[in-house]
Length: 85
Image (cartoon, rainbow, N blue to C red; front, side, top):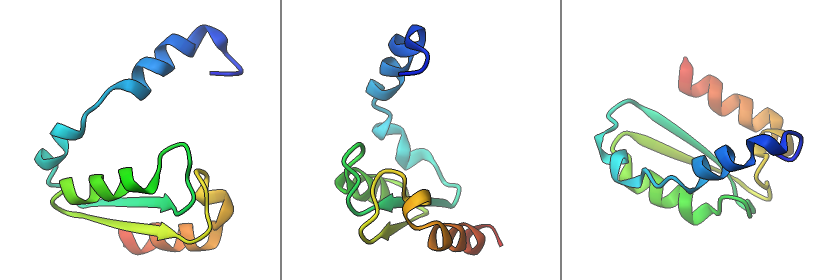
């Protein structure tokens, strides 16, 4: 939204939407990939989501931040490969 200020209101509405109550209704296998040092969406949120999603697995990347795919690209891709194969 920084590059497109006209979308800021829409972006904020999306981020503020709380859909946690719907998570228990999701039965599909779900992979949650989280950076241990994520300050934008803290690890505690990932842990809450993992508890609420009945068929999920939470992978925490040590030392990684919000963009764990950049901080730990090899590990990140390996987890996705394991999940989809």
